Image 1 (tube, rainbow, N blue to C red):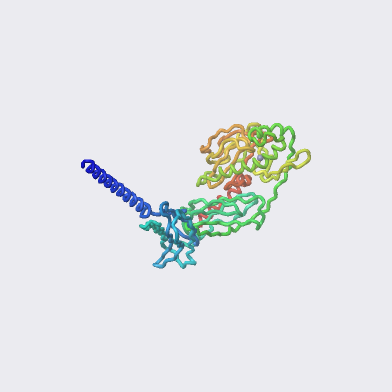
Image 2: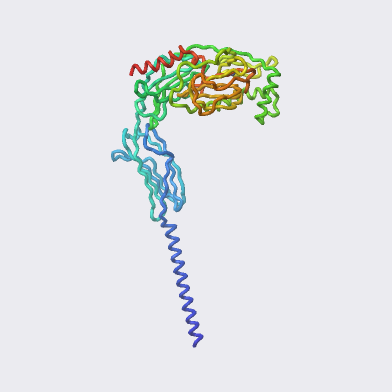
Amino acid sequence: METDHKKKQSISKSKQYLVILLGILLFGGCLWFFSTYYEGEKPVLKLSETVDTIGREKIIDITATDKKRGLRKILVTISQNEKEHTLYSKDYPTRGIKEKTFRIEVNPKSMKLHDGEARINISAVDYSLRKNNTTLNIRVIIDTIPPHIYLLSSAHNINPGGSCIAIYNVSEEVVRSGVNVGDDFFPGYPIKLADKSCYIAYLALPLDAKRGSVSIGVVARDKAGNESLKILPRYIRNKKFRTDIINLTDSFLEQKMPEFQQMDNNLRAATPLETFQYINAQTRQDNFMTIQSICEKSVQKQLWQGHFLRMKKAATTAQFGDRRDYCYKGKTVSKSIHMGIDLASTRHSPVEASNSGVVVFTGYLGIYGDTIIIDHGFGLFSLYAHLGMIKVKEGQTVTKGELIGHTDTSGLAGGDHLHFSILVGGKFVNPQEWWDPHWIKDNVESKLAAVASSR
Ligand SMILES: [Zn+2]
């Protein structure tokens, strides 16, 4: 009897366990079912950029993500005055799309949207039984009118390899404006003339520019991306540049090339002549890229006053724009264009800041040797190369005529001299103009005064 009772007890206990186990399984199953099919994680919507204005055309990339059940539906619309246009609509008939990036194009004119406020609605629904939905409602301003450019300066007479300033104003707030000279862009900087705001751009003309061969125009772009262009009336003068033949001697190559070979592993096995050919082409180009990146940022203020100073008691030994043919044993082995002026005096002559500004570079710069670059504001820079001793530091403010270093033979210099360059917007220009008080008066000071008095 007792054994029977015990048996019965053990069976009922087993039943109890089974029920508990089934309960746990059922609970776990429900949990799994709900967390999988009935999950509550909403899709995520990301835009490639913040959109608050739309111009004549706007392209926006959107990424929709749903990590759990995946995307079911995406819909993008734009609405204005209760009229709605579909920009994108996609239904995914089967589950499994976790992420989708798509592009929408808004063209207000073809959609008959007018300038003013509109709303972009982006929604994504997922495959959860809950149909989780994420919606972004973005207020945008449609602005299809490009900025109007008012040209304030006149008489843009430019020499090939020379500089010029343009003064203009725009009808609305712009995110980018300046002057295009062919493919080169020279930024405009905000200034005040007679207490009124306008823009000034310093521009440079390439050496090979001929009358009519290069287009020059003021460009402006507003927040909505609308761009406008105004051709700059200009007169391009004729200018001829010299050709200079430089004979390379073995003593120059043997004396100068090891310094460069030491610094570049590619040149270890090269002959002195091969080394020269490499540095006169490749290193020259690399150094120019470095100079351009240094000159990319400039103080938004005119730090210079009056004409630039030319090194005292110095003879000009090479001009700006000289086309140089390098000859070795009667053969032309390399070419370059001289983008500065060489000034020679006695050894280790003092070098002065040609005008006031801020030192933005000091140090070794390949063919230029030990170099100083000074920012004079609005994209105007001066460069001093082949120095021996540098007396200033980066970030230091210098005044016109202040001692900044001494001449020497560092870099690709045959003898002790100063290589002096001026740059406008990262392009080398003829320093002769900036040394000339008459040129400064006619091309900068009078222009600024004429605009100021007409306002
Ligand atoms: Zn030079």
